[in-house]
Length: 176
Image 1 (cartoon, rainbow, N blue to C red):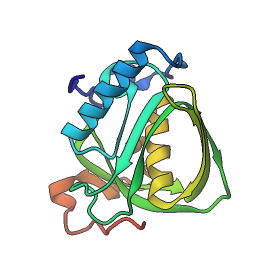
Image 2 (cartoon, rainbow, N blue to C red; image 1 turned 45 degrees about the horizontal axis):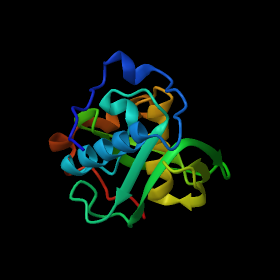
Image 3 (tube, rainbow, N blue to C red; image 1 turned 30 degrees about the vertical axis):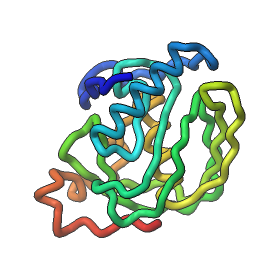
């Protein structure tokens, strides 16, 4: 396993819709290992395969004791292969987001509060969860990467987008 370079906003691969992944292969397990190493090395809440240059529908995420997100509830370590999201209601909430592919920048992004996600693990086990709050936000953010969307495209008021150090006193903690 290895820490891989993270592609930055502007790279053409980040604009592509990722292809479905084949479950159970040694290559998929190696990819997930590299994603995990990279996410942890950079204190990310999650990472998608396209961010490390692999255009496949694979994301991982976890939140516990992360210095980049000190005020959010824990989110269990999860690997999603070929995820499908179903929104549960129209209620949205705004929260500050950052991204390993958009380093040093944060923005206030509206996301749906509740959703259901379905996927399989690297070994083909079914995952079917209904989540809300920060957990739902992380899933939406990571799955957006699979569709070629970066969080700045979701920001509705660009006055609430900027460099972390310049926004430091303006960012309120995200809800759980």
